[in-house]
Length: 204
Figure (cartoon, rainbow, N blue to C red):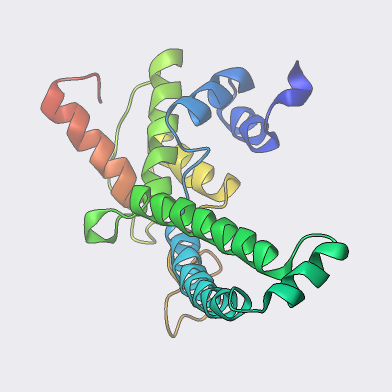
């Protein structure tokens, strides 16, 4: 049903003038839907430090709670679950969250600081172009660094529609550079173009 479509896939499909189901299909199959951008990756790194710190405190508290007298533990049973059991459950939950977030960071941290989500969003656009039969071209930037070809303009638009962010840039004037926090469109677009060129795939 149409209402199950991601609104961002609808917006990109409107921009491209194609079936939104095609966009959503590749949004899911490329892994772009579960990827995080560089800004989110940095936030996740900071959150991981806080979670690890919290786990250390819980472990210390759990050690103390496990040393309570049998009388105290029996008294707590009358009121429900003993505190040390709740602390142990919290500690296990924290460990699961930490492992999950560590895996997410590892999957989205590329060599050279590449913005994994931006590249997957560009891959999604490439797949849509291939299915519809549109040509892939890079063309390079103009003087104001705006894209000039249908493909690069579409990658540029998709990055903004899906709000793919880059790492915060220091000393950036947000009034003069309103798009400064968005991921770069050039690197993922060029990577796809060069890959297709090396493989002899359809380009222009």
